[in-house]
Length: 283
Image 1: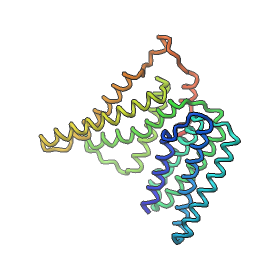
Image 2 (image 1 turned 90 degrees about the horizontal axis):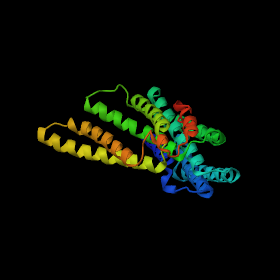
Image 3 (image 1 turned 90 degrees about the vertical axis):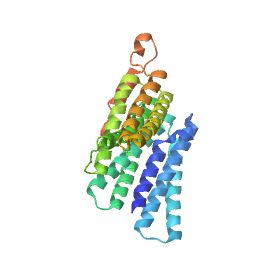
Image 4 (image 1 turned 180 degrees about the vertical axis):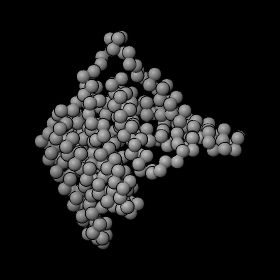
């Protein structure tokens, strides 16, 4: 049943990284919503076909039917609603984080990964639908959404690198990942309050984290070869991540004092974003 967890993770990544769609207007935002919904429907169909133990042809028809139904429904819904890119990414982020966290939480207590996969898909569907209906009351910017998503993605990586550096042994991988993910979402929300970044700034920060981590890991590997030990690798990768993030944030205008220099800010929007329920990954 490992494939069911992999399927849910793939769908989560697809919802959390809509950048490839390049949504710039209402039409492209609807296309992005339709694409994500279709992927979700296919995932539900594949998991249902596995549960019903169907042969290849009926399973393919079931997956195609579920995906087609979600495609049609989301297309009609997108036509009826006036959606922009921030609305769609708000819905996708809510569905993705709720699905992932429900999957991890259920996997901590359930013996069957099938139950965890269904819990994740159910939470993603309900959360995404609720976010779509309530999107008018939440006006988080695309930069804020990207910052919170980045926190949820990078905090688990940093946490596990820390555990490897100090040779810590977490009792449960899923439990630890869930805690780190929620901590990352909270950290991203706090950074929104301090900086209110643009989406481009967050992308540069992500690049700094990635390149810094890879560079630090490479240096750690070289040091480890010299001293014949593997401990420096995760530690220097973690240091590299921090340095890369700090450098790119400084180079691309992450400055909490920008309001005193007369640069435009959106404090009310940032305040509303931070007030969202973090435990539900609402943005």
